[in-house]
Image 1 (tube, helix red, strand yellow):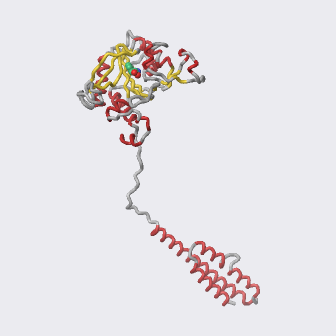
Image 2: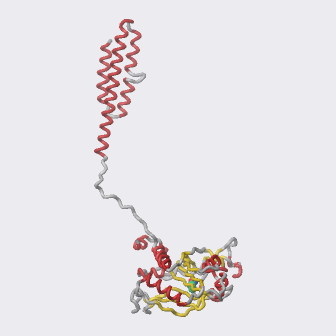
Length: 354
Ligand code: PHE
């Protein structure tokens, strides 16, 4: 009878040596050590033996069981170690390989230009004031000294915004109330009404919209940076000095500024500020259309009516205002020939201004 046990042990150990992986090992365990396995079968024989033979047989069977369990544990460890070895050598991480560079983005060229505006005007004490893109007709025109039917409104081809009623063409012009702001100047009224009677020194950056043909030189959306200073004793020379300082900080120390008379309904007097061409320095070239000068801003002294609309008494207060384009100076600075690139979302273009 004990031979039967030895034979089982020998067979089981031989089979164990053939178990090559976790699955084989598990199959082996079920077959020999499982509840319905070979060892359990041999235990069942115990009942058929004469009483005095039982203890010795039981002890022998237990020894076989212990031996098989120990062998199993050992084989399991060995297989685990082998698997680890394969993993360590086979799928090794080669730390000497150069890494993959993540594709880093950067700010849009317009945002970069805007931030240069903020920095330069901050040096001169101007805060940034945020005003809405969707304006009322009153703020965009009326309070800026352009009542309905004022011919100066023609300077700004306007997008009208529908509110409830989709077909504006059905309505008379006087019933059109909301616009996409055609310039940042309506923000002037908002700051004045908020700050009055405090002195004001702010810039108002933001997007403007005009109902215009899109060409290499004009877009239907673009940025402006408005400026407004209101206080006691502010004069035209303060405006010119501010614009000159900006031009020198933005485009180089030697920049010259030229001022021409102009017209805006919300400034009196009104001026147009030109700067000597950054490309040719005034000699005349394609960028300045052989004039030697580049137009950089519309500006002027805040019109008394506008001051009054903002809550300030024009007998006591005065102020200046200016409006810069943002894309056009960037076009000049980087010698870009088409304004549509700014909104084209073409990474080949945008990527050049990192
Ligand atoms: N709002 C004017 C424009 O869009 C520019 C401007 C601003 C002129 C402030 C004078 C003062 O053309």
